[in-house]
Length: 152
Image (cartoon, rainbow, N blue to C red; front, top):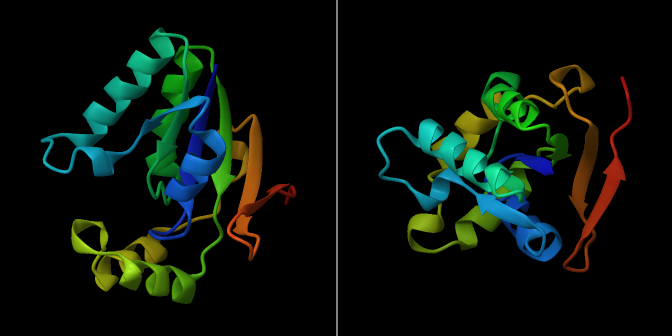
């Protein structure tokens, strides 16, 4: 089993990446799917655990900006013996803000929210317990380029 952790700013391509690359194999878990839940973190952990208990791979599609946000996901994956794969979407604030501005309704994040995430955003490191870590960028043709993250 695998737990994929998607990490990056809002409107950086994480959900599109899930839909086009991971959806066929990974259960989608996102706090965006339960905005009114009292404890979104607890609910997210429960959904991850349910998928792993069913033997399914999981993709956690949130900003996951800092190691302390990712740690509970990594720890839960380890309890279930799952591999942890990180997908890092390097920050492009101007691009994220432009794509976000094109969103409609509740999918649009206030600009202050994007900027707040940017202030917390930290690149993931091997010391966080990832079995594999990838960098994901747009390819300019509607797809993605996925590269193995370099060490150090």
